[in-house]
Length: 241
Length: 241
Image (cartoon, rainbow over all chains, first blue to last red; front, side, top):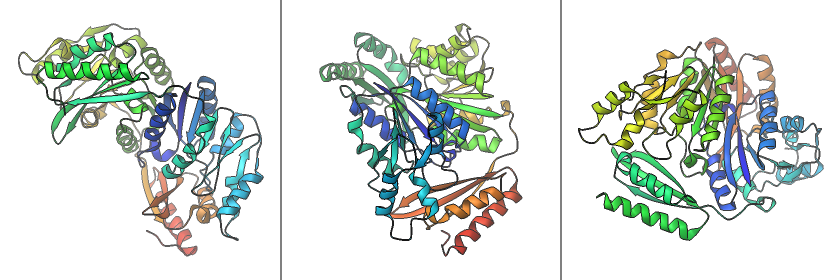
C-alpha cells in the first residue's frame, strides 16, 4: 500500500511556517508498512486543491491532507474535497455534537459551526484535542495543520489503514567524505538489492560527515547491511560516529 | 512568473530528515516576486523523477530541484534530468575544472568525478562551498540538498531569474481564538481583495494564539490591512502579542 501527503497552506509555500507534519507522517507510514510515495505542498486555492485531491486519490492508495479545516475564510479544504468528490457539503450532526461538547455554552458561534460542515458520506475523524473533527472520504483522510492536533487525530484512526510489514531503518554515521565512501557503498547496494541504502552528507560545527541510512522490512538483512557499511568505513580508515 | 520546488530524496519522505530548503526557497521567491505555486517531495526513483521533472517544467516558469547530485549510487538526479530532456549526460570540462580546484591532488576519484557528469547543453551553477556545481537546463535549476550549499548556490544565480515586485508580508498575533476572529477577518478579506490574508492558529507553552498573515505587493495596502486587523482584535477585547 502506498500513500501521498497533501500539505495545504500558503504559509508553508511562503516559507513563513516550517512544515512539521511530513516528518511525523513519514515515520508513521514506515511503522505501518505503508510506502509514503510523494508529498505535495499546495496553496489555499480552490481549483488547485480540487485538482490535486483528484489526481492523488486516483494515483495512491491513501491520501492524507493537512491544513485548511479551521473556522476562518481561508479554511477551504472541506469544501474543496466535497467538490472533488462531487458530493454536498452539509452540516454534520455528529460534528456539531463534538463541537458542542468542546465549547462552553454560547461560544459555538457561526464561524466555529463552519467546522461542522462535512462532505456528505464522510466518516468523521475524532479530534481529542480541540473538538473539531477531520474526516475520511473513501481513501482521502482530511486532517488539520496544527501539528499536535494532527498527530493525535492520526494516531486515533490508524486502525482504518491497512499496511504491511514495518519498514525498519538503521544508520551509520562517519566523518569520512561521501566521495571516499561512494564506490564501496555502491558495491554494498548491489549486494543488498532488498535494502534501500541512502547516503546523506552533512556539516555539523564546521565538520563534514555522512549518514548512511538503510531501509528494509527484514531485520536480519538490515543488520547484515549495517555490518557491511561499518566494515567498509573501518576498512577505509574512517571512524564510526 | 511562478515556480515549483522538487525536493528529491527518500530521507525527506521517510521523515528521517526535516527538509529545510522549502522555507528558504519560499522566502527567496517572495523577495524575487516569483510565485512559489507548488512543492513536491519525491523519492530517489528514476522514472518518478523523470515524470515529475517533465510535468513541472511544462506547468511552471521555473523548477528548482534539491537533492541527488552528490557522488554516491543514490545520486541520480542529473542522469534523470538528462533523460527528461532527452539529452546526453556527459563529462563537463568546466565542472571537472571546478572539482580540480576544490580537491587536493589525488583526491578527485572516480566517484567524485561523477559529479561532473552534466546534461549536454546545461549551464553550470557555481558552488562556492564544496566545488561540485549544479546546473540549469532551460527552466530547470538543479541544486544540491545540503541546505548551506544550496543556499549559497541559489543566491549566486538569482540574476538568471526574472521576477516581479516583491511580495511583502506582515503579521499580527493575538491570544484570541481563531473562532472569535473569523467573522471579522472574513469581512476584512472581502474589503482587501488584493491582500491575501491567512489565519494560523498555534499553541505555545500551552496557550493558544493566532497569527494573521497578510501578503501583498503594495506596501500602503498591506499597512492598511494590518491596521484593520489590529482594530478588529482590539475591538473584540483581544490583546496584540
